[in-house]
Image 1 (tube, rainbow, N blue to C red):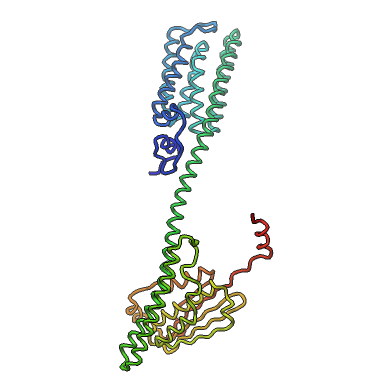
Image 2: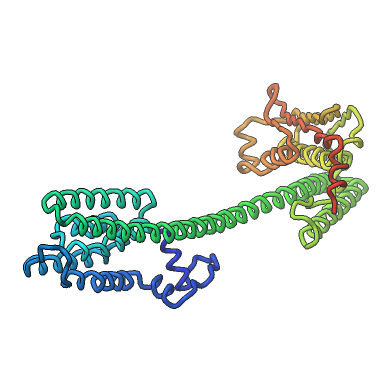
Length: 435
């Protein structure tokens, strides 16, 4: 169960701060107060009793002296109110009501004995409840004291001076307790807010770290899939062709192509591992060089493996930014890989790339789609190719759709927008602001 902020303040004193590295509370008494709240409440109650009880036993200036019964009753009431102060943290409003009760039930000559208790109680209301509750308690207690004073003054007009003095002293005691409590309570609530915010930042930091690690794993897995899946598919196709042919020359050529494809895969893997191990590169740096993949290489690999791939390019692909050109090459490569794996009977694999003024459109279509049940059995379940293609397109703010089209045809269509140009004057503004 998560701890509250007030518990965190106490925990900071004992060293259990949930990893927040809070400083040690200053002062021996403050640390004792934080570690032993119930003992501190008992000490407060004893102090309040020692300050209140003697007043009940002293001779008052009130013309009518209290009887022994009234004095004993006052001491019992004061003791009860002091006992209630032990619970001032958990029930501050009820404790204040118990502490303010003697103000209106004791005889006028013994009322000064009850002035200290409401001050301690209203302090607790301000600290452990709210400033608003504190001022409501102050106004309520003051109003009760005014009514009590007026009632007693009308009953004994000669005691007006004493009653007004008692009213003023009680009000001042309440006001002092309220102001000190508001000051301490506001500081306490501010500290609790800081601790809550710090704990929230720790949780958010851990969540961001986990999300970042998951995103990085996905990025590495996508790049690994593009490299390994394509090259292994080409190698498998070439190996099957070399096994099936009875001509030694064609078999030898196929094995040479297998070796070249494997070397290329090793080169790409070595480059990616070099990026992963380089501590000076940005975490967002591409995992492979932007020139590591090209549309021509992907088409050539598929053609060497014996697949009927035809490439059509409209516009100048070389004018496209390197990052977008790399995404185009990977999408074409993975689309051809899927066609080689899942459409081995295709008679045509048509790859069209159209470079527009605001983006690049891709359309890779093959006519080797088999019935769904047969394809599912041969594939052994869903793979990671299509999700990787969509992630690749989304990485450059593009969209991608893949699915059957016109019966036995399978189409992959992607639209990748060109990055927006920097606003005019932005570079100059950066240079002006540069140190």
